[in-house]
Image (cartoon, rainbow, N blue to C red; front, side, top):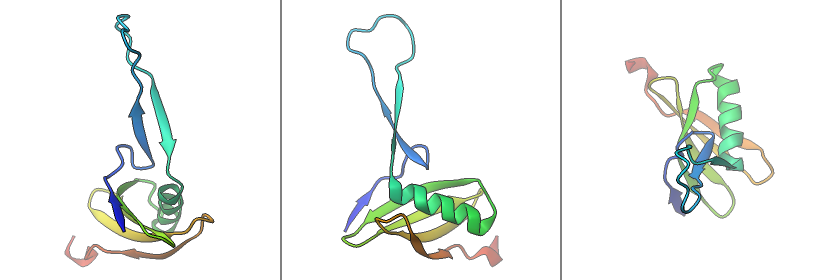
Length: 100
């Protein structure tokens, strides 16, 4: 299994594209690259929890599926398994919310 680093925007990774030799003083354009497994888990965890404040903490890519750990709200963490067809399973809280 390969673990990928946390995404900068949660829902997508941000890739800065800077033009070589640009001296205009303008900010570099930003391109967004979507990760389908992350998107599926963000969608389904937001729906399950009723909280739209979700972000990807990390993804672990396996042969058959991707495990995605998602931050929910200020302190919650949820686990999700995403498959190549856009479905998810195993959505569960991994935070002992009784201690929060």
